[in-house]
Length: 604
Image (cartoon, rainbow, N blue to C red; front, top):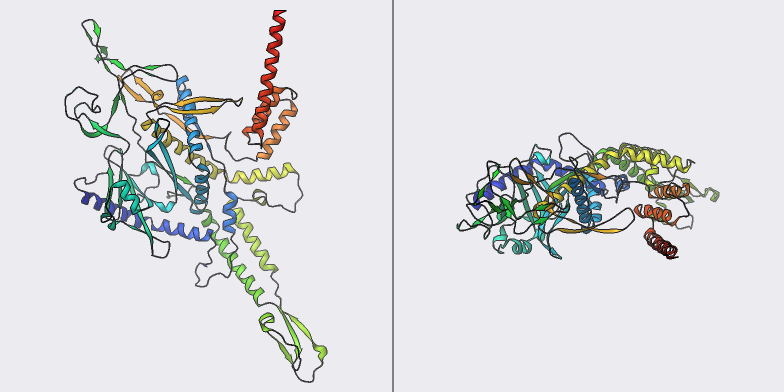
């Protein structure tokens, strides 16, 4: 995308115009999102009517909440082609992404993501590299945000992130934060875009809208532009490139070349090694590389001429944004919202429930008393009094029951509720609601599995979004993590091992072109064996059956019992970890006794 870079005013005018155009095109989507959220919150409005419903039976909230899952897909990485080093690197990527899951509040992010997806039809994930973070000598880490679809303004007419030339993200912040982060004065920030309270048109105090634009330049590199209102905050061409003072002649960082040319601000393209670098597999990146001409080394005075090894910096090519869809929909960045699918049933139920309430309010027991009766009745309770004519018998005391029959209304409301659940694919068993039907545990489990299967596409969309998220996390660490990242993992025996993620492990040498490059050809998916939706109680029972059946080994053996409790620990059985530690210690003692007896027999 070609932009005018000559002055701040021209840039600001260009991006402001682009933003307003995209914002206008996105208004229909925003309106749908707001309507869906109101429905989820129990809106009383009736479509096509100025009268509101008297009451709301919020089946939308119930159906959405019944689908919310706390399971977080675990990362899985596979090399596009097999080699021992690539398999080792794939395992390193998985451990890195798992470590990010553990460090960041993914439980909270997942909770937000689940509701955004079902209510709006999708959610937005934004990943950024935070170079201000430092822990135990490791500089920089990723930050992950889950955003509402109302916080992304995409390029009009384009429905895939990877196909867009630009997109906008909107954040709410304060003038004080903008002043600290971008050095703007209070007078300059008077022109910032104020953030207004929802549906009131009243400014939210000191809150302002920060607009972030990601766009691709003529080279296909990602760039970033930040502004608020009529204030430009930052413009960062070549967003993923490292910045620093470089030699304009050879491109090396300041102090790493011998050109004698004064350094200037620019993009760092490569680094010069000062020491040999050893990879996890034992290979070595030498600090010096032979100088070649025509593919042959240059020899002078009988010695091969060498130069310091230059390694390129990795540069991602993607926007740092991932969209999770609910269910796919034609010509839409997001998927179909569950609120939209069941809106007709929700509206009809609101009307019927209002009708039921009206009938019950008007209903009651009306007393019949003589006109000259001394009984005093409170109309606020009974509503009305029927007085008899003078001289009529007191035996005519009685009542008139005006309670209406609402059984048909209730039946119709329940029928509509069943319609809504069938539209989404949810059964009573899936919601954990007991039914009057007597059935075995196996039959009930089968019904739950069938209901779960209808929602499989939604889980696949979630897994696809997390796989794309892991890919972005991997590329950011590949680009900016200079220091090896210390990781840990647990083996099949429950033992914890140390490991590390090192970006140098992904550097390969192209002998034909005579240059180094990064091997980033890895396929990302979700590990179905961990973090997937399953009934944990059923898995616990299956592990117990395997123990009794002897498929894990002799049930009385300490080794078998250890394997059983390790399986239960992976299935999150309560207090399984204590049993793993107990049988691990018991096995260690048994081995010590056995080794002692063997030594004793050898001596004798």
